[in-house]
Image (cartoon, rainbow, N blue to C red):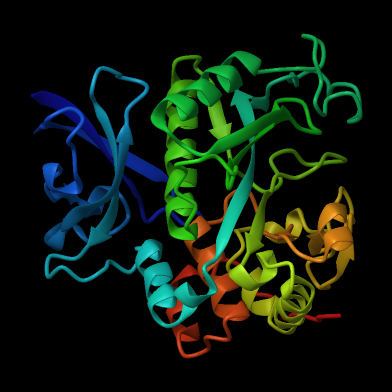
Length: 367
């Protein structure tokens, strides 16, 4: 059966990679699809900031696929890794970095996670709800709001959420955020039977969810902005809080000690995390607007101004998960999770592999 498969990959845009995609007709048998149905494909890397024009051929290797809720009718979304002509991972291939961390011992953690992806809708150069005449009422009434005077862009959000459900992604929530035109979706562990919950798959799903968001916003002539400080002034930035657990952290008997050990490791490696947690994250992590200063590390129970928040229910039970509130909205999920896993698993031999993905270098003053 002839179907359309949309091949999706991360490009070489700096300081933050963007998603690219192109469609290919494939021959599949509905209900019996496998990765083998989606052949490797080439593309022009000189047009995606990934190769020079005189040596531009790069390869897309499919690694994960889902039903395409946009085209529907047995079409597909196919996530790909970018490879060099010799089959080695391209230098922009952050998924390969995460695979390497897992292979070096990170998989023994049996890590699981989730992402709280914030984003801002823009139109004609302004966030929805703003105009070129004046700023709207100060933040306060917009978070989880209802009503056209406070809620801007809901039609896109609702359509995106349904598309994620139809595709089979582990989406578990949506809400309006603190600034007008700013929203959030959550994707990750839900406890549903049949869900794939390994942390690599959840990173894959976050990328596909972002692609769906941008694709659906096209139909409304609205731009999706993932900048960490999309609007200057007294407005919240946009982050991607990353929930994380290991088998030991989820265990009733070992959770408390495992959380304490993880927090100590994260504190001691704060600078390594900040370097790969998103471009211009210093504009967001100011110590204001529900953030901790980028120069400090602090953990706290039910504290949304901490670097790491321990949910109240987790503190009461002594096991569960922790929330890393430092990653920015434009962070790369593979790099963020690779860094967390490497730190908690004490994998140091791969630290040099993170250098191509450093997008903010500061002289850290950890506290």
